[in-house]
Length: 117
Image 1: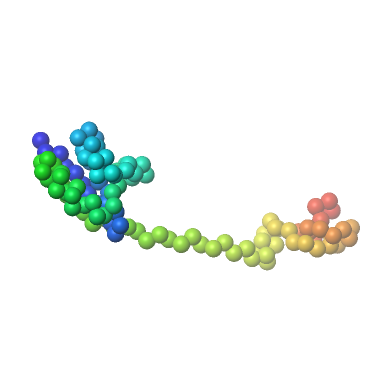
Image 2: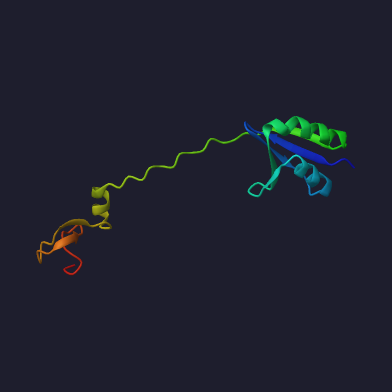
């Protein structure tokens, strides 16, 4: 039975997927590949594709090359804290004077300090 090896080709590297086989692991190590734990595959630089492909086909492995489609990274939304929004929710306090006792400090939406609430 011929074992299948799937190579996913990206812009800068290749990712090699296969069922555990000590011979294949030795081949990956000889080409100085490294184990990519996140995707459970071996990763090598792109320029090593041709020598790796030649060695795998010489040893009668069935090689399938697939283009790696990398999803663009979504930018994280910037957190903008609108003081009016938070003051309406009575979550965030602002610096000011308490209406009841006149102390300076953080006061909430109702302009009262924590002691006078």
